[in-house]
Amino acid sequence: MINNIIITKLSIHKSEKGDLLHGLRYSDYGFQGFEEIYFSRISENTIKGWKMHTEMTLNLIVPIGRVRFNFIESDDKLKQINKRLEIDVHIDNYVRITVPPRIIFAFKGIGSGVNMITNVANLIHRDDETQNIPLERFEFK
Amino acid sequence: MINNIIITKLSIHKSEKGDLLHGLRYSDYGFQGFEEIYFSRISENTIKGWKMHTEMTLNLIVPIGRVRFNFIESDDKLKQINKRLEIDVHIDNYVRITVPPRIIFAFKGIGSGVNMITNVANLIHRDDETQNIPLERFEFK
Image 1 (cartoon, helix red, strand yellow):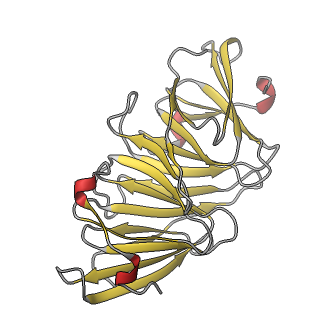
Image 2 (image 1 turned 180 degrees about the vertical axis):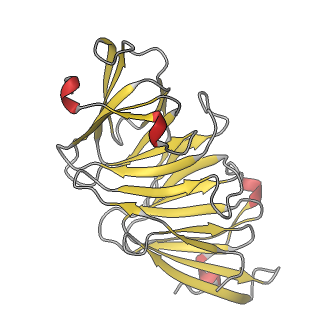
């Protein structure tokens, strides 16, 4: 497990008309402020990553489909893995993952339909605080 | 058209790995602050509503599926319709709808797969500022 990542179980209110899925409240543990929300779809058997933010704290939620995340805490040169975490998120493991700056991450669509991540971020995306790291650098598990 | 409702066209970055869909930034026109985000699924040919919030401003986004919204501005007794708006939201009409307090609304799933609304709200849901109005009260168009 990586120290500063927070995994929070979220509740679902079942309804015949369509379920209501909780996401994030400003009073929740780990909330660092709100600047932007966006959605990232990820096709089955496709990987987006590796990425690392140097300032942004992410809140990752998967309201549709199934997504496998890999998180890595590395040395400062982004070469050596110190700790790693793999987690599958879907309706039966419906959690929010709060990811602090400097954690390297990638994610893979593992559902056959639409897989979608919502990111509630404390900063608007800026290229100058976003690093793209070649997928070959680390093994995706 | 109802005066204080704001409809904002959102951008989509197409990608073979999975599209990136914009949602909301704190610097966007009409943003009233962040307290909660949640997701509401709505089955095909099913209607949720009518509802009215007396304090909350909603930001409604449909990142998956197709949803028809009806909005009503009524008299204070919630009987007479002064103005109304019907709008279908989906990937080809990908907009954010900012709904101020005291607008009556309902929505219907019109896609055959998963239909899902994201609400980015300036207040945490409270029963004492939420009114449920019988669906029979007004015609859903």
